[in-house]
Every structure is written in C-alpha cells, then in structure tokens.
Image 1 (spheres, rainbow, N blue to C red):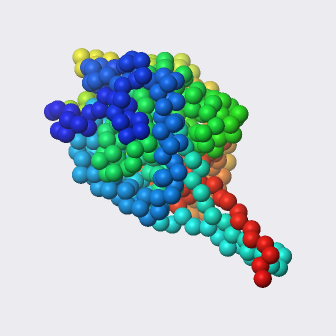
Image 2 (image 1 turned 30 degrees about the vertical axis):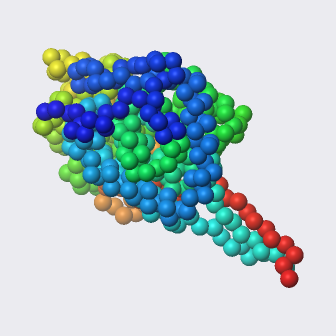
Image 3 (image 1 turned 90 degrees about the vertical axis):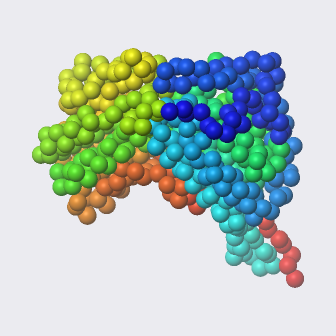
Length: 491
Ligand SMILES: O=CCCC(=O)O
C-alpha cells in the first residue's frame, strides 16, 4: 500500500510565510523520514533566526486586519478549512501514518479528531462575548470586552501531527490572533499540508506562518520568538523540561503561556470494577498511538484481590496485538517515532526487571527485518515503586502493573508524582467514584472510561503537566484577554 497522498500538492517542502511558500533564508534543509523503515520522504527547510523574524513580521503585519475581521467571518473561514480537511481526510491520514508511523485507521481517525477542533472553534468564534457589570457607584457603566492577545507562537509535538496543530491554530484564528508555528522536526509534513488547505480555504496572507527546523536548529529559531515582544503568547505541547525553559525564557516579555506538558497517568482498577470493561478501557488508553500519547496510562494499579485475573485478561489481549508498518492493514501498533524513543522504552523495561519486575508478555524489540523502531507490546508486573517507569513517562507500548491493598494507599501512590495530566479508574461503587475523582490530582479523570479526549472537553493538566486548556468553551480564553471598560459621568 502506498502512503503518499494522491493530491501531490499536499506534500510541501517549504515554509509558508506571508502567504508565500519559501525555502529557508540560507537554503538549508533537513530530511523527513518514515519511522517504519527510515526511508526518506522529502526534505524541508532548516530555518533559522532570519526565518523566525520574517514569520513574526508577517504575523504582526496581518494582525490588525485579522482582528478587525468580524468573528462570524473568521468562523466561516474556519468552516471552509474544516470542509477541506474532511474532503482530504484520506490523503491527510496517509500522510500522518507515513511520517508518524501510526496505523492507517488511527491516522484517518486523527484527521477527524483534528477537524473536530476546527469545527468547534469555527462555531465558538460567534460566541466571543463580554459582560455588563453592576456598577458599585452611581453614574457609571462598567463592562468587559474580550480581545485577541496578538501574535501567537505555536510549537507542536510529533505524536499527533494533525490534531495538536489544529487545536492550537483553530482557537487562535477564531479569537482573532495571527500566528507563527513550528511543527515537530519528526513530523512537519502533515502540518504543512493542513496549512496548504488553510491557504486554499482563503485564510489571508500572514495570518498563519509556519517554519520548519531540525532539532539542532530549533533553539536558534524559537529563541527569536521568545525574545520578541511582538509575540504575545506561546502555545506549546511537549515535554516538561522544554515547557519550563519556555516559561523562563519568555519571562522578560511576560508572554501568556499555554503549556500542555508531560504526564504520568495512573490507571486504577478497584476490586469492585467491571474487569472486562477495565481491560477494554486500558487497551484503548494505553495502546492508542503505540502508547505515545501524553494521556496514556503510565502506571496501572490493580487491587490485590483481582490482580491475577485482570493480568490474565490483559496479557491475552496485549499478546494478540499486531505490530507492523501502516502499510500493513492488520497493524494495530506501528513503529516508535525514532531510535531515542526505542532506547528509552527498552531502558524502562530493563530497569523495571532489575527492580524485581516480571515480563508477562513482550519486553523486547520485534520485526528487526522491517526496521529498528518496533517494540513488542509489553505487560510487566510487580516492579518496585522506585522503577523509572513509575516516575517518568515511558511513551511506548508498555503496561506496568502494580498491586495495591486499599483505596487510601492507591490514591497516595497515584498522586506521588510531580505530573498531573490524566488519571483513570474503574469502580462500580458510586461513593468511591466521587471520592476518588475528587482525590486524583490531575486535570482530566476518566471514570470507567479510557477514551477521554473530545473537542468539547477542556484538555490540560495541573502541577508540572502545565497550564491552560485546549478545546471546549474554555479553549478560547487562552488566546484572549479581558479588557474592562468604565464609562463615568453618566447623565
Ligand atoms: O498527546 C497528547 C494529546 C492526546 C489527545 O489529544 O488525546
């Protein structure tokens, strides 16, 4: 099966700045490869400081006009973009799978997920409202209006190359912001294809600007955005260390920040749970995108009494997962994104085994004849709480099971992490459901549910998983500020 899009113009190998497709200022490029077999797909610009600067200038120049465009008209443009994304779903889905590696069905599903944010914010654009406030003294009228923050820098990860950029660009445009964007170096092509469709939808020149950069070149590019006072906001999805760096480095210009950072999600199975439902939920949440998802369960706590039967059911399902490239229609788990990701996953497995863990299934690389990035879906049991995979996001198809005795105990363990993005638990006891939902220190809680993401829901974390919310009726707030108007001397 060929993963190349049938519409050739959707594979772009240039930046898009001020409505023009351009090479990097110095002509530098880097290669984008298929993680399934490391074959070269194309090369894209390896942009630097001058390209970053040009993108800001374009976004700043377009801001006044875009902000003045009625919200309804901005929404209509987003609707046209949404329609084009749906019309090209198959091509975009193939492109996601080609550069990111996820199975075809997941690539197609991701495009729908991305489109759902565009549609949501197309509609939210018409609901940008202010308030009339009861004045505290006579003769005054007090009100609020909401204004776009200005130029936004959007920095996206490789694990959802369509959805993550869509759920940042759509609210930014709906709010009246213009933007400069940098897609992940592993997966720039889907983002470029989406921008090509936004251009086709009629988004004016300069409103969206996107520049690509390699891992080595990214700091030089992003530093320009961090230092420039015209960039009023950064929206970033990625690791906690990088999020902290962005917060520190943008402090001098006090930018507004949305940081969707690392997770270390607990998944708790109480002994009053429906075990089959819990296994279903874990399969969906843990093995989506091969475990390379920030809301994937990282630590699975199972109550003593049901531990063995849960483990048996889970192992049967995990051992049956098909691993392979997206060109194989039977594949359910694709390659990991790159060699560094594979090394980390294998290191976590080895470390867990060194700390008393048992491999119940998987535990090693597979299909070396296809490529070096395939890891067998793995279930581990009984590693110590000091194992690395208790403290760091593994970001791979590894499900470590830990026994617990009491609710109190498991809540303490679940919250014993600096991260707080998602948490999940399964129980049929209504009182426990509300107790545990309240006690989990996470921004998202799945209660008897493993698939929590939705454009209608606020996505984001607490603690060192970041701040800000994406999607939902709250999602526009990150791209707007509130201005208070006070009229005095009313007669
Ligand atoms: O990995 C980050 C985002 C995942 C999601 O939107 O469900």
